[in-house]
Length: 591
Image (cartoon, rainbow, N blue to C red):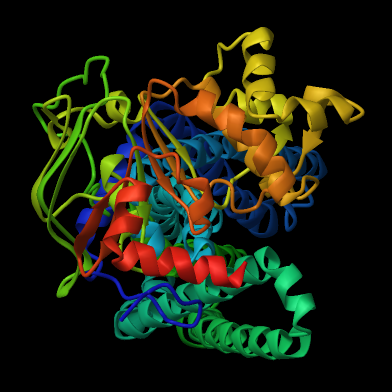
């Protein structure tokens, strides 16, 4: 089943195990000294604060009965100092961990984005853009706090429990045993709830991903939505996805918050037992009122780190689903990449050869089978044929956007699977039907593939492809700001900018895939001279539905039935009266 749907939940390839967390430790180790410093500040803060109940017990049991005013004032000042010192140390620790958290976000997001840049087209064909974006933005933000504060807090809470236990037993052993008696009950309940929590938060992750994917798709296609008045239907879909997300979230929150209720109930029960047993069973002669108040304070403090550990556990369970998604993307294999012994492709002339090439996007659905042809350097080749026959597939394979399943493709005798992708693609220029314009200036877009180009080179490229005329008429000329996808430009203007960008990169092999489809007939006629300049001395492949634009090509290949059914010049194919002849005549009749 295709995953390229906003309403299909993603499934993990393998269940989460500790190896995921060990892998996350790589990002934590970079900041270990800062985290150790934060831990020391926190530990000192905890120890300082634990003296408060002892000071309070001494005040109630000794200073107040003796009416020792100076000692009461001194103990009060001492309590204020311990509280203030504890708060200040905690504040320093928080500042350190905020910086560490942001650094971890940066490191994970950088590695994830770098990997996404290398993934083949197939990865993006199989899933909506929204499901990719949510990993880079939302999921990374969510897990960073767990990997920074979560880890430090976990160690700190363990220290808290140890320190508090020591202080408690120092004050009163019997009452301390009552306080720790609820711990086994809590651990058992947490263990029983672990599996349901993880599943609930994985479901939240899925529903959030689906909602994000649909929102991204809807925003991108808002013009089509309004054109076909689909607003109500789209709102209904959005409402359904939002409701599914809300239900998943509420279920996960209900399970997570039930743990807080359990801890709160245990804490209240323990406090009640301290007063009942301390006053009625042990008796005031053994357990003084000050001791009972101190132990009740320690009981609250003892269950605070327990509650903290449960919060950390909840956060851990919540964010494991996100961490799994992040590592799932990072583990996605780079199926189209450099071989271990890949070498730099030297500057090419442009001789190209397909030798028994077989390719399919999905197993069992062959697009090209045993395809073979040779192209000489500087030759122009047109690819025509019915929709879906494989014309675009052929040119995608030349640039190695996909790897073939059989055969070999060579350029100047070099097997393209054995050279580096960068050295291969740097010598190619590709013009697509949908010319993508990035946010920035027109100049930025034209120089996208050659950042060191001079202004003279840019203007010459634009004049060659007839783009300079409309750019010069704009208020800010080449410095005119354009939005993502170039919404401020017409479709024809976007393609002319793309033509200039391609020409400026000076490719040795040029691929034009329906490159003039959005240009009006008048502009296309003006562009023909520039196009001939663009093709001059380059090996070129042109895909066009308007056959009038490819008559000048050296050879025309008719792609159908998983291969080439006809090949020759325009005049040769017309004389042959085959597939190309029929296609050409059908277009003349429609004109």
